[in-house]
Image (cartoon, rainbow, N blue to C red; front, side, top):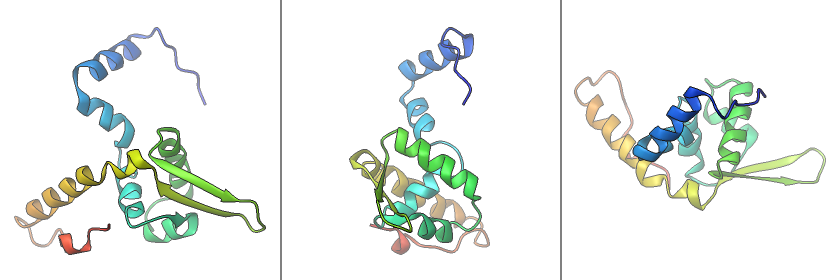
Length: 131
């Protein structure tokens, strides 16, 4: 990966934003399209890579691997590999990852309430929320 220039204006602006706005910190950890979806699927318990891949069919392998590595680096997801052939790797939420459950639940509540305004958008209910 490319090395980050620590003294750049962008990096200084990011540090200022982190200090002044806690939402910036959260968005840095779980922002983007795929990270919240991965976390949502791991709320129901640990899953193997192939199970995650099947539960999120629209994600590419590259994106899933990349985001799992980022979530692991941010201590939100734990990767456990057993030294067998073929490799047996499972992913689960860490304590910090599990602490995001209320955040993800609130996002789901908002989505369902918003979808009530346009019934053709959404079809799930909170009964489907994992965990």
